[in-house]
Structures are given as C-alpha cells and as structure tokens.
Image 1 (cartoon, one colour):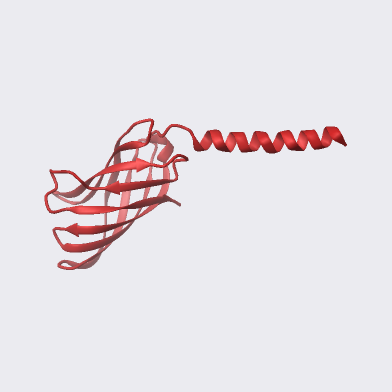
Image 2: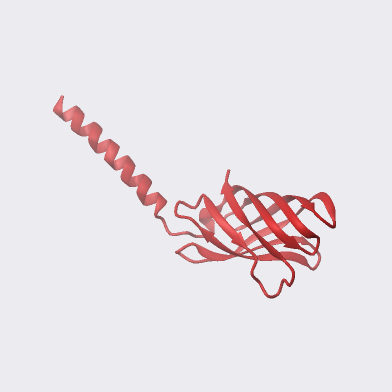
Length: 140
C-alpha cells in the first residue's frame, strides 16, 4: 500500500513539475503555432475602432487573419489579410504585423505570457501615425 501511495504521489509531483516546466518554456515563434483570437481597440484612420480577429499561425509565425471591424468613420466590415509574428525573444517580447490591405496595417509590440497561450499587442510604431491599437490574443 505504501508503494502504491508513493507511486501516486510521485506521479502527481512529476505531472506538476512537467506542467510547470512547460509553462516556463522560453517563447519561440514556433511555440505560437495554432489557432488564436484577438480583440483590439483604439483609434485608426477610420476613427474609434474595435476589431475581432481570428488567425491560425504556422510554425513560421504566419497565417491568414479574418478580422471583423467596427469603426466610427468606415463602418462595419469583415476581411481576411495576413498576420505574422515577425520577431520574438526567449523572454516573450517581440513584434507582429496585421495587414488590412495595400499600404495598410499595424506593427505591434507583443509580449507573450509564460505558457505561450496569451499575448498582448500594442501599436506604438512611429511608422503608423494616427494608429493607436492595443489588445490581447488568446490561444484557442
């Protein structure tokens, strides 16, 4: 009986340790592969805007994003354009880009949380004047 209890306790601790190790794994672009959904809010060339975008990243960090826009000046629409994680360091800080057409898009600073299932996005690029979007992406 003691052997069984010890084996069960060891299994529980080993499982917890494996989960903790996975949660603390360094972020890589390939670790973000899979389906995501993001909400974004801010000001764009279309005025006050809210966006909901769904995308599936491949191991290279790219994929097609279907985005629903609700904007003050341009109305409501849905479109599909590329999303890509363009850089990511082991601490989870990096950059990403969401296109909205020819000469249109947002360059985000991103921060991936440990476990690689959630990241924040904020467009602070001086190359995107009058675009102030921020939000969160959640792994589906």
